[in-house]
Length: 370
Image (cartoon, rainbow, N blue to C red; front, side, top):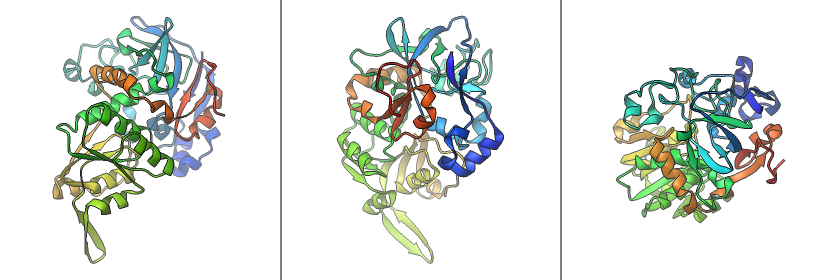
């Protein structure tokens, strides 16, 4: 089958890490090629309708993934873990996790608790390390077909557009993270109005949060969408949001703040965003890390000086994935986050797209942005 295969290259990794988005797309270690679709007992063949380009995919391609998680991936691999598939004519969202049950192992303590996203055996058993999209044995969604166990397939509710349905996986990450904020604070500030931030804003309202939600948006079109999705106020920068709520103190060349927001959600996936979230959280407040920053520096004093709490969300339980799929009919407008749908051949353009980019491996009749 046709697929985009990622093959690690140390020289390209180092160059991409140094140059970031300036690194030429054509030199990234991706290649459109033919790969075999393996057969595996207990797994079914799923036709890929759409597959998203995630921030973690870009972090991998541009050398920003933290080295400490590399033993839990395996390559070369067909990337793509945000997958909308088709089985016997029906659309399904694909849970890409490969945990104890998928690996032919007895359940580890976390899987016994139903916390498959925290499975302790993701580098053990009969499969190579990693979930779909980061696994050398099973292809991810940047190809025409995948294999998955039936338990990993969630039927899409009727009348949900495909471009909304493909967001089920990142929405599940958001749903899990938002649950960790309960009991709900009276207000939430979201840093970053990209896909994750806007999903969080929309999901907060869908989950019944009735408090104030503020957003930090870098671009005017993001600010407009944040307001349309239910934000009570939008700031053009983290500094603006901080000065609105906190009092500044100075000593010599140094400054510090008291006050801030009850909960700060970091959704940009950058080290700068993480540092800003720690500063924006008020004394005794909480920071939810939804983005995926890698190696970076941060002033850790807010954890003890302000007693700020930190939680993160990376994957989900089966119930949280099902909850995300169940929310899709309510979340009208999410499809507007899509910045373009591309054939696999146009992968350099997809990686340069503004907004959320999708691959359409089957070459469907939907318009492609080239």
